[in-house]
Length: 371
Image (cartoon, rainbow, N blue to C red; front, side, top):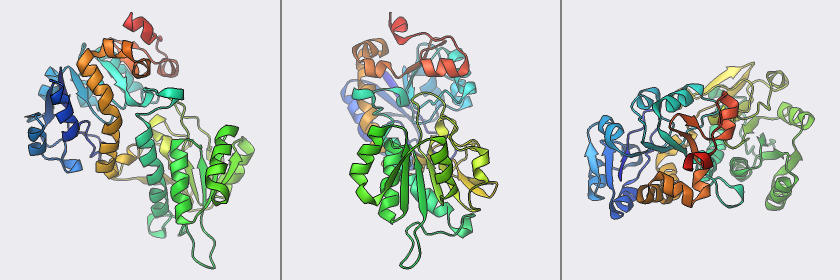
């Protein structure tokens, strides 16, 4: 199979879909690998590194979209990229379709076979291709929040860890999954006063056992959430409903109870955000202020630590890429129901139920597509 990867064009996105090491693996499986010139510069990988791995360098993305049977990316295709996708081609990348009707419409129109990293499953309902980026984003959320809390960046001027004689900052983490756990780890490490909210008693028990007295846990209902947010210096939105739009848990009304200069970091922004006042931002302009509260809503947080993120991502995406290339997408999906869960769009049909429901498309089950 001819497999291609292109330079990411989303604002301040420095990751790349295929590393030189992954290219070498694909070539070893007798596949042709095409790489757009400069695609790996954001992670310190030169065209020469890809050539040494056996890849072919192309001077633009156009021939890759035109001639490659599978295109491997990191972020959702931008409008100019979507215009180049075609029927019979496999797109393998993060998509986050539920809050993005324009992208969904373009993918449906193109006829492309789109496999989304974020809905590929693992044993026990896990999301193994989302997990490493959730780990990165969770850890980065505390770094970003701590910076936004500085007075020079519009915050209250609070140091999360405090100092002797001065209380530490209060961090509220909404959601105890992978993002929330990693955010809490970082906040606890800084010495902050940390509380994690979740609706699953088993998650709360597991978090309580892990953190012991270093972080508090609290059941997430409207009353507890409102009280916690009102008392917070930093709120981390770490809520995930796989494949679907995130629920709006922190309302505009709640902002009026928060102290001026408090900070919200919405890690769920890829799925539309879990704060009512959230809208996507970029690394170029990461924050904005609503009712005196600083919002950090960067939709590709891990792109800022591109090298770490790319290698962590390739560790989990490459095995599936090899199977798709070796067997063809249909046989690969038939052989692995976990990979089949990643199919979101095929030949003009929406094949992921949460996306179809959210955006008003007829839902076509993957099993029907595979026939």
